[in-house]
Image (tube, rainbow, N blue to C red; front, side, top):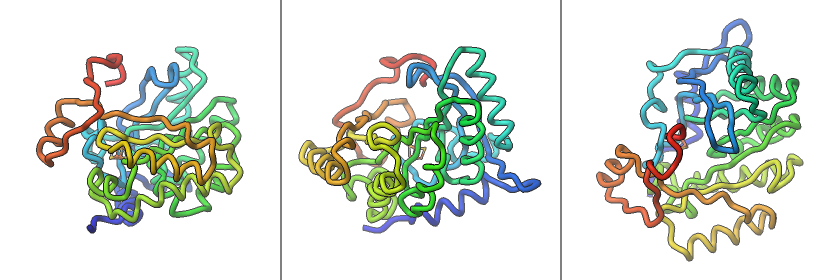
Length: 258
Ligand code: SF4
């Protein structure tokens, strides 16, 4: 089994979705919005990801730099702060594509929200944090973050089937948890795993959970993700011959999360 290297791909994608201007790193964003996850959260959707998950909900804009606009960290801060203040929200996140691709931009956005006293939820596939322990150390400098490492499947084979990436790259996601732990973040509180189990066998899920426990028992409190069967996602799954065993319909979740 072979596939693309998501670390190399991150560098290529970064060339399209991030740029330096006057010493600051700008990132391409698709939109800013409120979302109901986490009890209400101000959300910025970035463009660009280093994976190609078959179940990706942000397929419309994830790989479309032409749909985005570059923002400085401070512009992002003011956009999201405005949304949070208007709706009385105390949490911020970047979502859509993969926020870790533009490291300097991300860290500056987190820093600005730390100064403001707002929680920052970093939703990430964890690949770059697993690849570079320095990334986890840099994140540990902030006291306002919660890192949600979103695994793509529960085994190497499944990771490859769902993302098309090299199966060995699955290991970066475990390493992300190890690096965050070693950097001093509190497991289960300041970082935690999530995973897509829409296609997983029970035995693979058990093995996956065992592996998490071997890193730290608190990491067995997993945020289990099911496939959301948006029409486009269903079409892609049909095309590649993948049948989810655990899925939910889009109309079974609140309207503004679609
Ligand atoms: S990691 Fe997230 S944004 Fe990237 S392709 Fe997978 S689901 Fe989509």
